[in-house]
Amino acid sequence: MIGIRTVSWLIATGWLTFSAPSMTSGEPFLPQQDTQVLEHLTVKAADPVAREIRAFRASLLRDPQNMDVAVSLATKLIEQSRSEGDPRFLGQAQAVLVPWLNHPTPPSSTLLLRAMIRQHAHEFDLALADLDAVLNMQPANAQAWLTRASIYQVQGRYEEARRACQPLLRLAGRHVALTCLGDIAGLSGQAATSREMLTTSLERPRISARERLWILTILAEMAARTGDTNAAEKHFLDARSLGVKDHYLLGAYADFLLDQGRTQEVVTLLQHETRADGLLLRLTLAEQALHLPVSKNHTAELAARFSAGRERGTRVHVREEARFTLALLHDPQAALTLAQANWEIQKEPWDARLLLETALASGNQHAAKPVIAWFHTNHVEDMRLQQLVVQFPEEQS
Figure 1 (cartoon, rainbow, N blue to C red):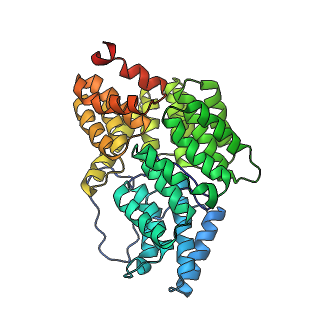
Figure 2: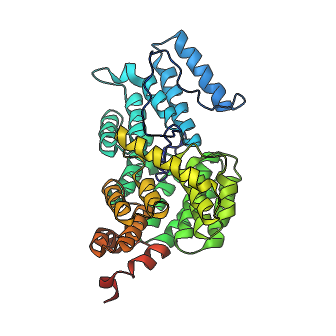
């Protein structure tokens, strides 16, 4: 699911939307042999990351017991999943780590990577358990603290997220700590302070392109939430100009364009990004608004993908399915059920927005109470959420 995004000096560790393999029906395909190739992942031969992945694979084949190579390969596969929005890279990463994860006391480096994989799968409690184990062994592991902060943030546990950011002030570059804290501040009533912190982080010398993208994306989303569309546009374009492909950034920018009614730009942006469910959803929303015939085919494909996800028991796509069910299937009651299930897992502005929209569309005022309480308790500064909240009777009294 497109949602969690944070970064470190090593790799991006965000909560994304991942795509199921393209299907035309919900029927699972069972290979007849273990060696049968199901599909080749689309990795460009000229891509330097792909070359690194091939080199690490070859090295691991030569020396299967080399844990350092396995960790490097798994890290690159997680990074590739971040870029492409393809969950199969995460499956490959986990497979690479299995020999060490099966040890009675797995090494901290493998537990940290498993925590990131579980974070992507929205298995937040399991991910936090892995992070606890890592930090018991390595209290100064900055990546573990950053990943913990990201999970707490997505769960709406902002005070715990702030505490997880604090060690980064001494363990990481100051811009990493300030961005970690600034992101949380921007979600909990301190948007002005947050923008100042993030801008300060952005101005520091020698930060990487991926770290710069991380900061710019947070700034763009914050500006959009507070109604500063000019600043949001600038930050999104600055992030895209870095030349780092990022699945989360594409989804966030597409949402911004959809909210601005710039649907043709969404089609241009996403027409070749149909593998990831979240991006295909945004493309289909734009196509529907433009009355393009292809929207019907894409709606059917999304329905099949979500059905297949339910059969697998995955929770990654619940937010996207709720949005799909409301906007494309026009079934507000079913969408509300999905939005409520999603709210149990994660509590970010888009999760709140979906639950409020589905509660209004289905006429179920009571269903909005948890979101309205979260909105007021955390002093959330979000123009669109405010516009939705005031539509509930108790908010007008």
